[in-house]
Amino acid sequence: MFNLFKRKAPPSVGTASNPAAEVASRNWLGRLRSSLQRTGSSIATVFTGKWLDDEAYTELEAALLMADAGVPATQYILEQLKLKIKQTGSQDMAQIKGLLVEVLTELLKPLERELDIAQHRPTVVMVTGVNGAGKTTSIGKLTRHLHDAGASVLLAAADTFRAAAKEQLMVWADRNQVDIISQENGDPAAVSFDAVSAGKARAKDVVLVDTAGRLPTQLHLMDELKKIQRVIQKAEPTAPHEILLVIDGNTGQNALAQVKAFDEALGLSGLIITKLDGTAKGGVLAAIALWARERKHTPAKNLAVYFIGIGEKLEDLQGFKADEFAQALIN
Image (spheres, helix red, strand yellow):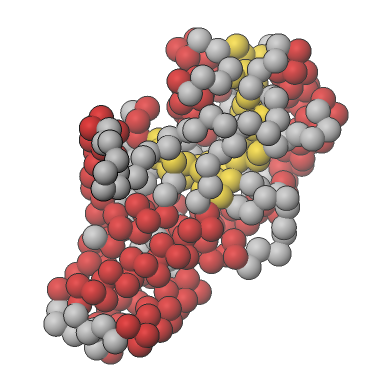
């Protein structure tokens, strides 16, 4: 398996350390904490008092709601926190803060999964999202990470709806030295079919299909997405193997609404959450995690948050780790 964004845990006693990996991990965690500071500052303030009394619980509830965790997830988190406090008998605020990190980690953990591109060749990944979410840029960064991991990648410029989308993807293809399939004024489904067929013929490891950005309310465009999905299946019956939605972390509860709408239309397998740097709405991941547990639409794969983005640089797109995110958010 190609291990994308896999950061090694701190070495155990008696094991050899990897200084470069440890430094990279610390740098990432530092940037993640800094990025989520606006979301977590009001939550952290609750734990500056001496006791977690009723007033402090009210403040914590308000802080979680302000972070866009949403009412159901906020209630769930508070209930689980009270249960852990009762089980452990903790009264120290530092310990209770640690319990909150545990609660959030346990809630987010089912979303944590590495992107596996070893089961199919090529692995066909269909990527969608609303305009402005950072979809094409995320595809470009993902392409670079795949390339650096030793995977051969083919891009499909099936976003024929947005002006200059094809040209933007071609820049990423040239920068990463990977092949791209595009057509002048081509039909998105036809481009996707050609790309999957070419990926099979050229024995590529991954085919990334960039589809047009759209709003869930644009029914004709959502229908086009379904058409692309059907046509990809004609080129390769087992595909698409992954259907990813790119969402802007700044949109808060609207991000959850997007996930629900695109999942209903396509059956999502994973998310890429961008623009978490400086957001005050990072708590929306808790809302997504709780919804995913109760998800009525159940495709072959449980929903995953594969990657999160905290900036424009290549290294600012990394694999999602529940414990890292929870610690960065609360601490």
